[in-house]
Figure: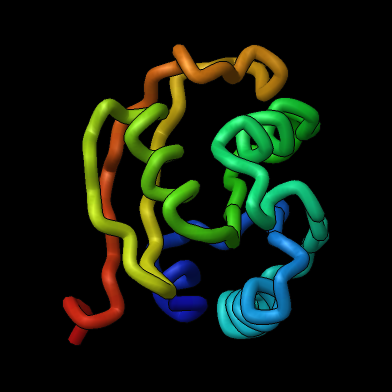
Length: 127
């Protein structure tokens, strides 16, 4: 998936990761393989924090960050995709979902914000 991020020109400006061991490992591997040179921010509340924790973590980001990668957990990730896009999708382990948001500023992001689900890459569907 890290190589896919690089190929799709989606190398994140910042990675937000849950502090769960598996999430930490995933974030580190993604950063390595996509050649991420920026910050990995470890967010305790992403572990069992619900979708509000994800929105809160995104809302405090600097507007300098245009491409953000969130490494977290289900069912919260699937619910976040639903909230932000209005589309119910299956997001299995190690899948990537690209959402383009219309917000100009991260601090204006709410559960009423709407984005567009551009694509989901699921590991079992890749060549």
